[in-house]
Image 1: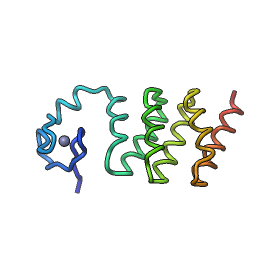
Image 2: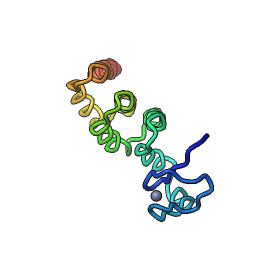
Image 3: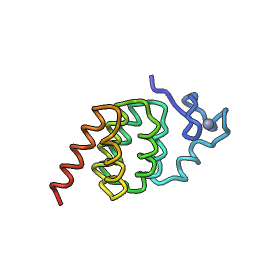
Image 4: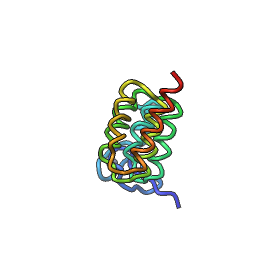
Length: 129
Ligand SMILES: [Zn+2]
């Protein structure tokens, strides 16, 4: 079964909800007010980890530079190592100076899966320039 969430406060909703009973958000108006990229960035706050991982992957593939501060913020606060890994890879694909700075910091991440990936990405990106 598909679970529906309020896009504003991420509470669970009935599938036919028009407004969120918790925060009063008009669901369709909320989504209509945003561009596709903005929706993706917003969805980094989604309660389901698999959705967040997919979104991080997409943002990296699409090289959405506007997502970089949100990605960096997410990797700072997530305790999910797989989300952190997908965000690390997204930063590598977007590859702005801010991304490279964040990746350099991630080479000191306590999880070896993350610091090794960050180091590998920085090496690979350096080879390409
Ligand atoms: Zn809500």
